[in-house]
Image 1 (cartoon, rainbow, N blue to C red):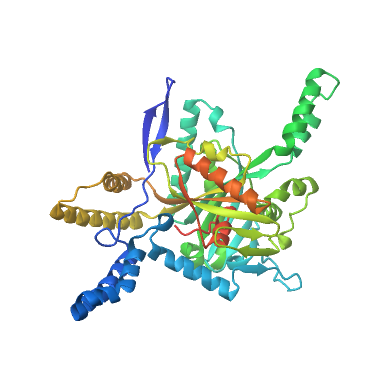
Image 2 (cartoon, rainbow, N blue to C red):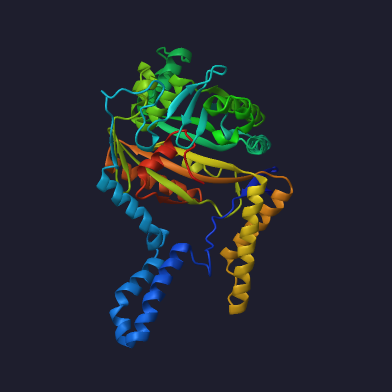
Length: 490
């Protein structure tokens, strides 16, 4: 990520801006991906022998095979080649045949103490309460990770002066860099959740702080609350830090390996991250305990019930944190009485942006949704290796273009510039982060979900984001996007 300073429009100050790297579209050979090369290879393997043995007749007879292979290699439905869709479709069909697209809770089945009642691939996830910090840590025995979640509090960024905004952006950059440099953090996940609030907070504030008398001002305020409170929304910001058990070797050598040793490592990362966030003037309200974590899990699966649970105090039992039924379909997932869909941020803005570029998406308060941005720190050795490979591929592609007299497109030049910039930043000592973004959208009916997805995608386009629905993998995508578990592959 390249940080530059651009002049703020209409102001005497300057705003810190960033240029996000493009997702590479470079192929394995000749600009083609592995799936495309396989399709071309199949077409050549069929077409060559057919032409040599039967001439034009062989060409016509074998046309269905080689034509299908070429179509699969080069036709791009919904932005992806048909060949790249093949494993997604095959996995979806196979799961439906096996009945793995549906999950039902069994209330009578005994569950081991501390194991969360989560569906599908989350089955077996264990809740571990750290004895020192009292924080609830989520142990994923399959991926061998341990995760802690914090609730954050911060002032309205848009209302700050440019100097204050720049200072907080610099503090956030230092916090990310500090987490990346330890070598123990496997993943950071930042979640911004927008849920129906039902007006309880507004009414409570009016009861406690307002002057409810017979004045005209009080009467006007009561009317405003009555009209606006039911449609009000609550915004929560969470951050999840994940460590991998394999990244705690020194703790393991002292005889405290496994989840216990990783919990000690994670507690140190929690303290370090808290200090780093303080420099960005972001307050860690608390590292979630088991009851707060249960509430976050339940409201992720059923966000429309948040007002009732907030008022009654229900939904905070860790033993009952999770859904009752899950049914995954091609473009959505049904969980209990809610409908959900997940879109992937395929491309981030291509021009220079400041820290407020997500405002059109974040301020879409009429949609119940969760924005999740995942960061995966890469070690200096891993980043240097990736850069060397990309530079070698670029040089090879450039030599091929020079031999064929093919011009270098603007997209290819931008990719070259991005890799060279990453190399300069790595040499200068900056941390290297891989990142991706998901948006989980929820509604109480299929029609409402379709409208919410359309509204969310429009907001994403206003923010300069190119998004696509994660077809055929909606249940796994929802668990990654809506739950603070750091479960995305970057």
